[in-house]
Length: 167
Image (cartoon, rainbow, N blue to C red; front, side, top):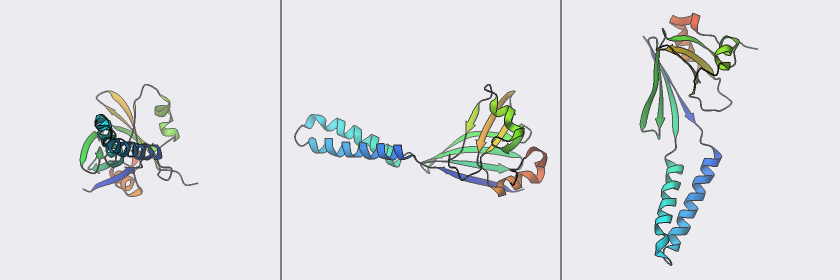
């Protein structure tokens, strides 16, 4: 039995970085103004806390683990806190296919099925859809497995995995 996992960092947006810098500049400005008007100190401290949180505490990555017929999804925040997003066994999985593939088209277009997006939103990675039915509820999970991850799943469950067709 082999356990395999993939870590996918989520790239921080430019808007979030610019906002953090603006908050830090405002914090410095208000803290300097504290020398003249001490009443603005709480505003400066609030801007400092918000800027620090946006700049240094908003790192996020997703982890996809596969071990002996079980998919585990987790979100890692700031490289220190892990939040489990879901565990799905291969008995619950209906199909794993590339995004917008014909085999998952019906699931993607059904508005009644909730979609969980565990991707980095970068164009260079191939996004796959995992359709599962857990406790009578369908779910569509978007994730970015690598080739080794899919190869490991295909060893025992080839009939449930659709690979991207080469053009």
